[in-house]
Amino acid sequence: MQWRTKRNIENSILKYITENINSDWSGINIGLSFNYKENNLPFVAIRLDSATHKKLELGSTILNSKDLVIIDLYCKGDGQRLDLVEYLLDILREGFPYYAWSPNPADKENPIITVDGWVYVSIAGDIKIDLGENVNICDKFRHRITIELERNKK
Image (cartoon, rainbow, N blue to C red; front, side, top):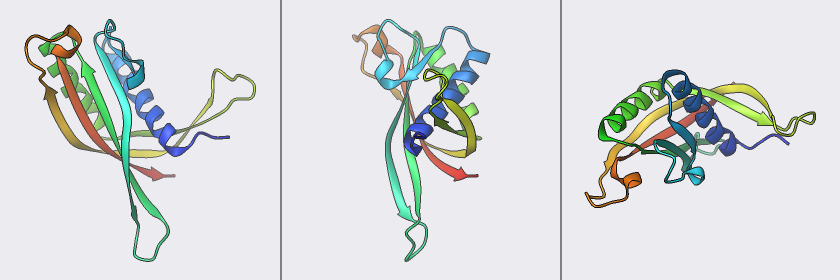
């Protein structure tokens, strides 16, 4: 069974950000939010937060869905935080490919990945998380980017 849309969106943005950061930076850890560990700085934590679903037109049963994704940055310093935020905003503003994942019967560890559309990005929020001076190092240089995603289907 092919993965469902929300799981594909979360994994598509993870794949896109990981490929870009790995080609342009070194030493940046990237993963879904539940994989974040304090001793793993710097870390880019991605999570699908919520969604809105509106009818495409009056009387229609077709929904126009938009997903809210939160990207939390845990950095080693303020300069790194600022550079990483600007970099992520630059690579995300044009959108990214939507991939559909499905199980690979021949190799369960490596699913089949197919390009299946494009995801458009709107920046909904870009804010420094300031928890004060006397905080754990992992909370000292934090930032949150909130984006709204809309998928176009092939």
